[in-house]
Length: 223
Ligand code: CA
Image (cartoon, rainbow, N blue to C red; front, side, top):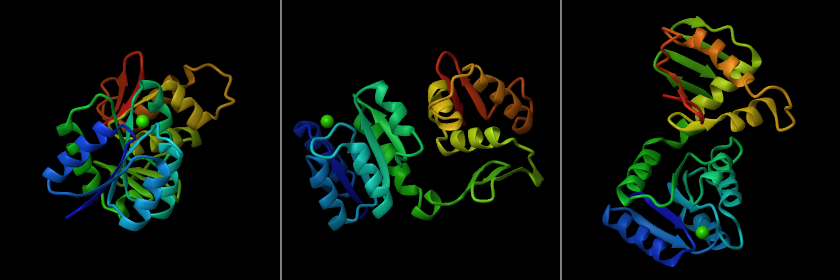
């Protein structure tokens, strides 16, 4: 029976999540604030943690970082505002996934199941793979089929970031701050130019991209 820890300070939502996940057959424990959540996690060693971002005493993102370092469970963040999403999916948070409130219980259950499917070894794997595309984060090299791709440093960082967050839309602001740094003062369209170059290298038909999708008015997504 997989162990799930729910850390959420809103009592009704916490109780609802716990009873729903128990009905799904999981061994569930819960905590009402970040510090209690950390103590519970250390004792219970959950396979998946569902963490609210806004928590009293120790906030959800700090808790997420500690758990990632100490226990490496699957981590799903609950966010209340779209404005929190950028921080949640930022590389340094260590979260695997997120859902935006209000969400449906089946939606959350599906995310929990997906997080359980990703074995810990896969999460810490330095090699990302998608179809015939392979990215080795340690060696800083990428291949398509057996052919090594000639990527610039920025193209490599951009591809790795998008692949790590597969399925999630990453905004231009997030991509700029993660790949170019917070002090970047150039043209934000730099991102679009690099995406175009990247598509030339990883897409069958760069004019009709299947992997690196544009999400109009928002940013990009790797599928
Ligand atoms: Ca909260």
